Image 1 (cartoon, rainbow, N blue to C red):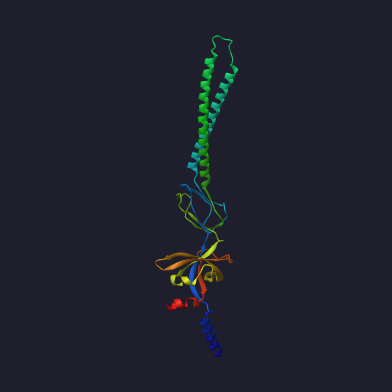
Image 2: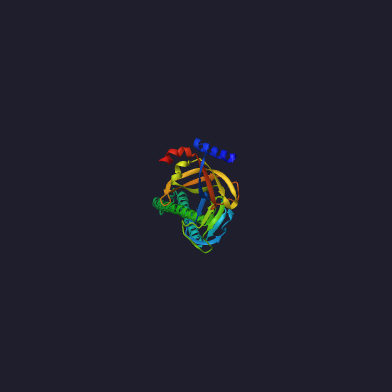
Length: 280
């Protein structure tokens, strides 16, 4: 009896002195701070899929490959156009060299009255100018064809979609033969190194917490207890529930902690700081 009375008196003393800490209890969910939605850059059909849900992947691992038949044709056409223009450059360069060689060979020839060197030289100049103009034109076409071939080559590389980072495939919405549209997510990759807890806190409790506050939490499914800190309080309330979203960082010391797990969170605060507010 005396022990119980002492406990009650101690509790009352702590409460009146402001040393007693009250708590806020909320529930939350483990989420990944580095979740990536993966899609294709170009429209096409899926040729191969190399992963399934739950697979662990590393950066640059192959995820899926799109059918390249159409792009292969475009690549062949681009390479053929490049070869043709390069061949024409060689033709006009050779022709221009022949004209210059012929002009140098017969320069100053005066042994024949029937041979008009000046007229012949003038014709060679015209031919040389035409060949030079065509050579420049073909060189321009070579640059254009080369650029087109490079573009097709880059596109071909994007047909093989690779993992942008280490993680686990948690969602997959494609199969071989499916049509993929640009910008449409077909896989979700989650990085387990950057896990956080997301929770909703009542508007009435908002003044009782601050960024950087320590919290305690439990994950009942794996009987895990841990602590973390409030990373951020999102300054946008849910108009339906009048709650604010908070994010809590913690160290993932248990390899069985995964995104989506249910958590129970306890946040301590000093009620004496809000005595006047409560009285109002």
